[in-house]
Length: 245
Image (cartoon, rainbow, N blue to C red; front, side, top):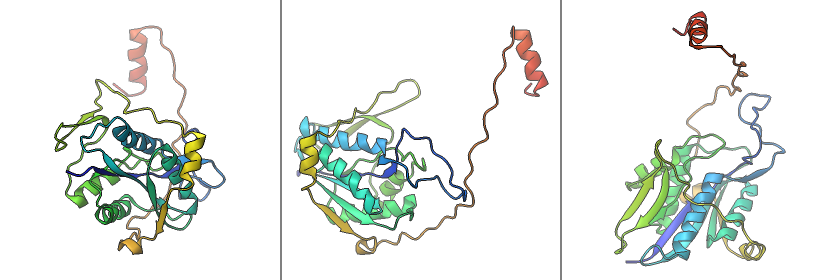
């Protein structure tokens, strides 16, 4: 049995430390002039792929770790970050600035890459922090006809390499999948020499035309301040006053 050929999709998003704001046209979240970085859930996926190789957790080893992104030219930065963390090479499907791809379109691109690169395992972040869709992984599994596991907190392999055990987050107990490493300066320099294959969606034979229309994006109304009550009777009275009971 051959080693793992792992595909890890990564996405360039507004940095998680920034508070998102709706743009003036109310069509999307404002991104112009803001700091961007790799989607934090995708960092977990890169880290887990590299750890499988480093800790020799798969019996036949890891042959290839490929980072993938679909986005504008600036998205190459997060591919360099992924390679500095340990990915071997990258694939960049370039699209115009501001041209977002819907989850189904991304899933179709990923399927084409899986077929082209003979990938046998895909690690995806559970969702991106910009649209919070959380749909791409499930759609990709459906297109490939592959089994899938979601909300993973631990991934292990059978001794013969034929089975994968995935432990999942549940309400009663949670555990972080891993803690992504910081890319060291030597690895950042090495990443500059690693290969990024640039291509278009048409090169992969995929139509990424939008099928959905966003009517309007608005921020939620400010939350009203709470109030204090002296005792249970006061709470009941307040709930009756508000029509809650």
